[in-house]
Structure formats: C-alpha cells, structure tokens
Length: 153
Image 1: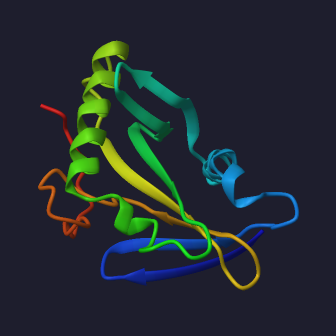
Image 2 (image 1 turned 90 degrees about the vertical axis):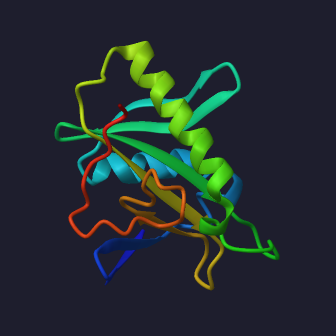
C-alpha cells in the first residue's frame, strides 16, 4: 500500500493505493478498518446497527470517538465517493452516532466524523481518509479551522 498526503486548508487528506490483486473494490471496507488501526485508531465497532441506523466504523483516537463512513465507488460511477455523503446522509450519521452514544453511555467523550473514500485509480483502488469530514451544520465539508470535536448535546 502506497501513501500520498496533502493538506487543503485545514482539512487533512491522505490517499492510499491498495493492492488491487488482494483487495477487490467491493471488499475494501475491511481494508479501511485495517488502515485506521495502522494509524493508531482503535476500532470499537464495525457495521453497528440500531434499527434503520448504521455506522460503518466506530473508532477511538486518543479520547475522541470517531464515527467513520466508508464510501466505495466503482469504475463508471456518477460522482465521487465523497459526493455520496450529502445532507440527508450526514443527518442519518448524526442520528446513528447519537444512538451509539446512548447505547454505550459515552456522552462525555468528544466526537468527530471522518470519511474513507475508496475509488478506482490507475494503479488500482485507492483510499482517501478525510478527518473532520463534516460538521453539524449539514452544509458540507467541515470549515472549522481548529478541528473542534463534535459534542452531541
């Protein structure tokens, strides 16, 4: 797996090129968990569900809970993986995060939302990890210059 990193404003983005022979595009959600573990996150839950609500990954980085949405796009898909997390999906993720916090009595911890985008590339599928992918305004990517953690109350 190769790593590329870029900073645009205060949003940190990292791209990872996956070994296409070992990681078919449809099975890379597990690779996202492996990647996050390799970068110091502890995976607390995968594919957590509460009724119609679902969280792809719940991780912990230091004292911060990180709710991670994993989006995959195949060749010929309309729009990017990042585009697939619109206002309605963000609201669903926020409701799911609140349900997880209630179910695990973790309201005291700071939280944030990350996004792992998995898309085809010339050298095989690649992953982009976007920290602080969005805030609670529902208006798009995070614009907080200090990367303030989300508090669910």
